[in-house]
Image 1 (tube, rainbow, N blue to C red):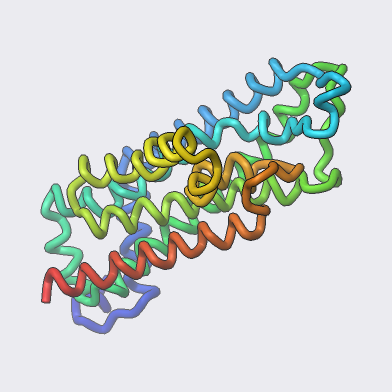
Image 2: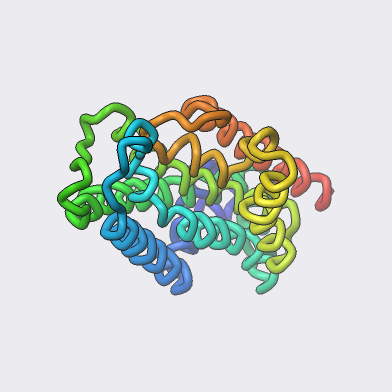
Length: 259
């Protein structure tokens, strides 16, 4: 902290400061705990109600997608938490102290994104693997037992954990752009749920397949290809572009607004 106070700071110092702030917030612990419990519970319950497919559905049946159904909840909690990492400081006024310690706005945003991204990545991977091993135990004996060595399964589990971290980073970027908690959360919900659902109803998957929720549901968290949707790695690349563009816009606006 001494380095920050004297102005001799770098990314490591800023990241350490962000880590202290993140872990000291009680809401962080409760939100991440809700993500863990909610996603695992939904995955297990969904797998317990998964029935063996008929002969006509055997080729497209993909229990991995059912197993990772909790991502619909997890993405909302992690995304909102990402928003609050930024907007919480603006609403409380704590951002003044933060900017006094680290006046370099892009560096500060990078530190926030780096710390939060690593935390949510670790938790996301832990959740998806625990859900995989517990959820498959709940499968009906008539349903083929999943294994990480099956085609596409390990990739689906790993990328689903990565997805949570990417949504968290999108939340941070939206928070940096909007700065107001309610408006930022509304923007996040629109991006994840409202807009893709509306587009899916109007145009099918033509445009909706490029939105995060559609990408994770039809490209990442599946072991078998879904017709007319992005391939897993193309979908992952699109999500990475979302994050880079959103964080770039957030960093640019931070500098422009306070110039």
